[in-house]
Length: 507
Image 1 (spheres, helix red, strand yellow):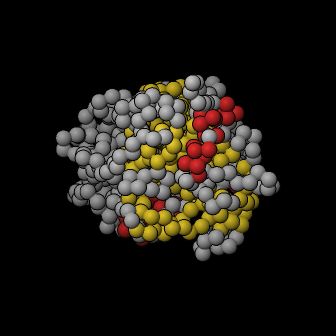
Image 2 (cartoon, rainbow, N blue to C red):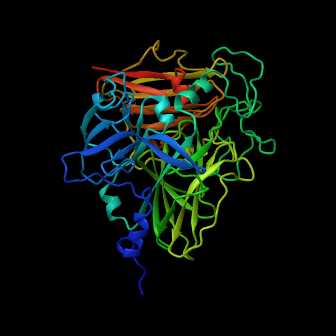
Image 3 (spheres, rainbow, N blue to C red):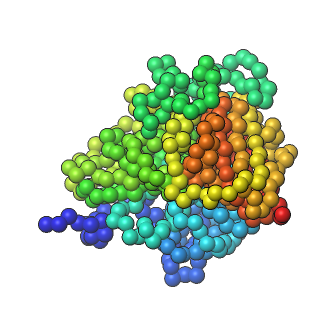
């Protein structure tokens, strides 16, 4: 008997019943009969470690998180704020008209009970949506945004979304207040030393004595300090806050989502790091996956069993399930710490065993690892053309007082980075701090062209991980004449001032 194709498998009644019992597995589309998709910003209740937890969310007309658009569908969305506070929602990685970008520097906040409509042609790939109010993003006002291509529909593979977040039983406002006040010191102490911009206290956070951060990792996929312009005598700061749990599709490993898949079938894992302050490794155990896209843009396939990504970034990983019908735990490992979360891919009848939410040892640091970034190559790079303008953006900050800056300035007293529409721009992020910074540029897709002085034709992204004491250069063609947000996607850093604007002017 010939093996079932993915479509036949998913069409079977048994599989359909299993999938229906797993609402987080496939995020439902809004009705295509209506003129527009509907989204609501809501407060909802989930269960974390056996306790009821109140969080925020973005749900579609069926009450499920996020949206999936099929090829050719416009992003035509009516967003309603059902919260009792104002909000604003950003479509991370999409390039809408500036007025629809969902940020308060160019659009008014949506009041409690208010609505706003959006209509633009979306980019295909794995994206997400989230509040652009840092405390609300900590409170999980976020959801997947998947825009499928014709190739996705034609491929004989099952799509699975892995949506990661860090979670606290306290409100986002309380979490940020504790961090920015300098009272959150989870693993180490601030040492005495200079607190001027560019000179920082050296905390050892999530550091394991037997695994120094300066030691190379065992293979190219699992990390190392290769390519990092870094004084190995100094330690990176990894985690600013001890969250209560780490969630994958709203669940911990104590009660993970078990997703029905085909024995020996192919899965496209769309992994989204929606965590407010946490970098993760995606770990496939002994199964080799193929990284085929980052931040929604295709890359030359790269094989590996472990792939790291920072806050705001996404990974598309093709996985061939084991032919013996065994389950595949897909784990997200918190960098520099033992905590982990994840989902379980399980063929029918496979035994699913319990997995602890804490590993026996701390996971390696991701923040200093640029090995994968150096190796990535875009399938659709920017067209070759001369560079018209260059900028250097200095990333600085300190732990006490807790302040993070761009070019020595804080949001509200910042000088925008000026470019002309249509110019090819190269922007170097020069990190002078001992923390990594995931830098996100709104309204543009950029290509990574240099890492610590090594020139590459790297991945096309919208969020780039800049290692401690490192340098990353991106290239882009300046778009719509407007101010576009430029900021660190670590929510505590952003809340403490690490945000500016790209000021695109008319030529």
